[in-house]
Length: 155
Length: 84
Image (cartoon, rainbow over the protein chains, first blue to last red):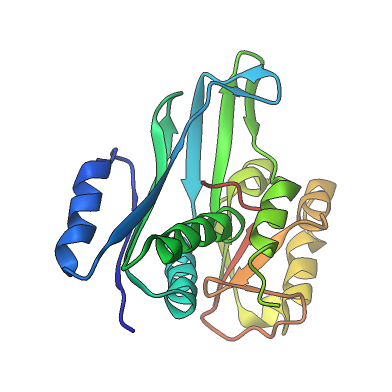
């Protein structure tokens, strides 16, 4: 089944309503849209976060996200996927990532949305640097993110 | 030529974001390229590129150390990813 996809890596903010409206407009068969928005927190590992810098590998980032979406389209009956990831300098409460998925019924939309987000966390080449009162530091990868992605391994 | 890119913590620790070398200088595999890169540099290069968790991509797909290089390849070294 062909699946409408939009993958964007950008500095500017995004608007959830606009993106959901876009997914609704592609086919009247859409009966469900699930979305996830990631937000910059003001604390991490007991430090105050003043700002966050996002670096990425241009080209490979878009390719790896597209690959994850292709896997989701094979696995679930979904009509459209929008993934937006912001880069550059972000502040606490800023939106950082959006994954939105449309399908006929909610089950496929919920599952595919979580799957895409879990794999994006471990496969897409983005790196976060936190600015704290003690100085700047690169964020370390978390084992819990690997476990979240491994849950989806085909048995 | 082989174009080599470094990202995030690795780019900062090495103080370089990209460099180029000939396929002959790079060697036939990723393991050889890594050895060539650290050969005439200070100990920091061995420490940074020799770390267990360094990820290597060729032409924007993750590969292992035995991957064979071809002229014109884009090779990237980067730490575990932390997006989302």
